[in-house]
Length: 475
Image 1: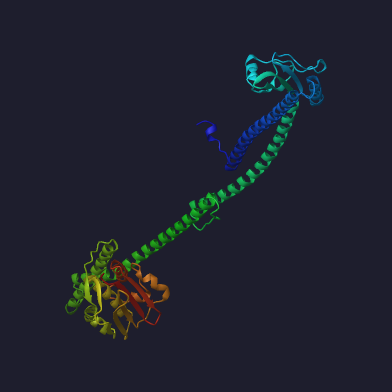
Image 2: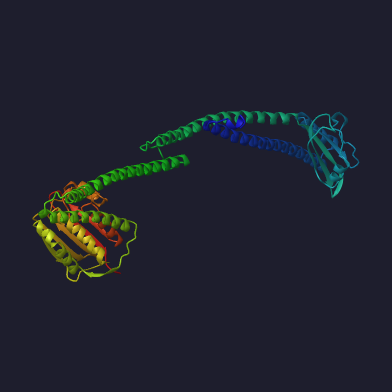
């Protein structure tokens, strides 16, 4: 790699050099065009003046009010004072000027002479070969009745014209230098402004790469740098949200491992203790049946843990196929009451049903039963000597099912957390024969979503809880 390929040029200098380069090119091009335009304009004005004098001379000669010598003398007094010389000639190229006003030599090429005889005015911006100095000259033909009878040649030195053009170019140069200085200053200021904005984004990027996602840079819709800053802030916000979600997932993973360990330790310890007692004949004969029943109960508890995990994963990954049908709501809620009557009775709870006549729900029978059993058992678990009310009605093309209890209620800050997998409130750590692992409500929410429905919770600590399920009717 050569030395030049390793050279770094700061963005500030790149901006200044690019601005100055563009301005220099623009100034050079404009200066050349303007200078050429002014030069052409000045020379055209001079040649137009010469042509006008020539036509006036020929016009006075044609009118014949004075002799040719008098006309020539009159114009000589005027034109020689303006440093303009002229020669009047006839068709034989003989000069008609008086000797004391001898004009410029009549030197025309054969081609120019033919053009002049045809009535065309000859114009030359400058000519050095035929005269002693650079001059502009014109030759105006004298035509009477379509016949060429002579003409007039006028010359004017271009030295004064060149001096005027040089002076204009000098002022143009001063203006260009002044504009260039102002443009350099403005370019430096604007470049500094852009570089500062870019450096802020660069510093914020370094902070993000170091793991700080709580950064922000000023943004706007004024230009691309402002839009870049806006996109950067959005990116950082998403990264921050992602990191918070990752941290939350990691905390939930730790909690999950702790919950699973806690839930599995007790039944496994119980099973291991009973088996060791039976193997070593440490359990009296009268208590063996009780020990075997305990092992069976704890084994079923472990099976429920595994089944609930498998069921949750199937539901979460959309592997569950729903077979929807119209189900009579009063019959469905009666089944829930019959299945959970004993559990509710053990805690002194009463299950009541309030169903609108003819109300139905369009759902998968097994899954809607699973949803309602999970929620009702959750209500029984946190209610003692109270009432669990199951309601059903049709509201705005949807079936609304409400399960309300008079139990301990849920703290408002905990409501959104109850849908998390393995999440359990402190009170739920009491013995629960079903859904003891905190999977029940997460399964419920996913199953309701699979039915294109919605589930909400209304609760106050110590004032009971109400679950509201809305499932669309059949089209």
